[in-house]
Image (cartoon, rainbow, N blue to C red):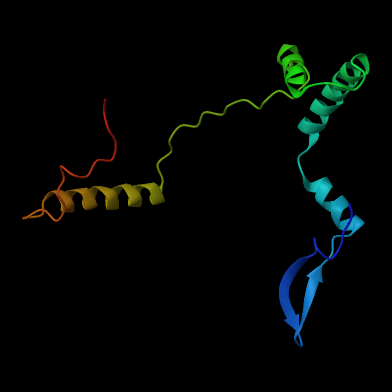
Length: 131
């Protein structure tokens, strides 16, 4: 990671008219890397980089992007990537807040439908289309 004057980001806070600039440090970068969820990407790269390196060796370093994509189409990731977590199905459990929301919603519908003359042209408002 290299930092020069062109890539330095201005924080915007000023002390006595002098702007402070953010300069990324090695410790900041290490902390950022440790907070990113890169396990899946790292597993994928550990598997695919040797395949591409081997392909480049066989063709003396002259490999077209489409050739690499064709090789990737034949590679399976089954067993390599982590298993996704199970989908949790939750039943609706009524509570005070959903009851208040539903009551307010229903009274709003009743109010708008019972206006004489109607405030809105109900034929022009479509929430969804049935085809």
